[in-house]
Image 1 (cartoon, rainbow, N blue to C red):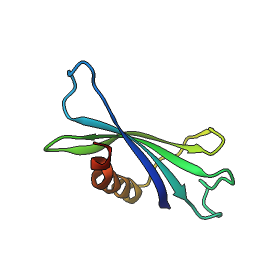
Image 2 (cartoon, helix red, strand yellow):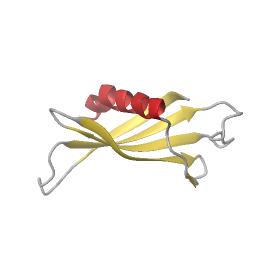
Image 3 (cartoon, helix red, strand yellow):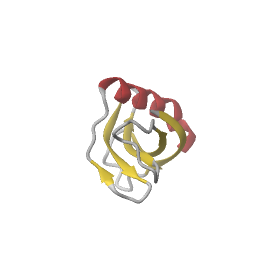
Length: 95
């Protein structure tokens, strides 16, 4: 699984109640044809990401095909670590 394009947007909290910052990432993925996630229409991963001065984590994610179909798959532990690292490195581009 390779990330070949992404967009990120900071999610604003108009109430100021929530601590930390939240981001929404859309990651365009490249997967092998023999992977069960493969779709001819393409595959993306929507990630809700949280970050503050002491912590960062993936709050939620889901896979989606290029046709909009939501897929019920989970990331493997190493893939989730890779996504967390990617989000940490690229969250600042949304600010």
